[in-house]
Length: 87
Image 1 (cartoon, one colour):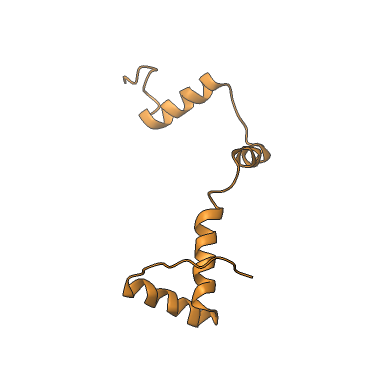
Image 2 (cartoon, helix red, strand yellow):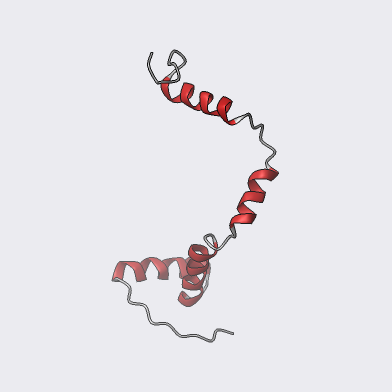
């Protein structure tokens, strides 16, 4: 059960958009707003270590930093550029 009441002021167009979503999905306006709050806040609540684990789980090929840096520079500056960025 919900235990906190919060008052939010919306523009008429914001409320209309939310009401259309609620009507289309057969849900209450409050349910749509709660889901929107969750979608906005929960994606940012992911701990850094979980994000890092997700990156490691991809098992992407990783080269030595100097090799990677060279590849990045070559990609950004073109194949004829030297390390200083000159062609």
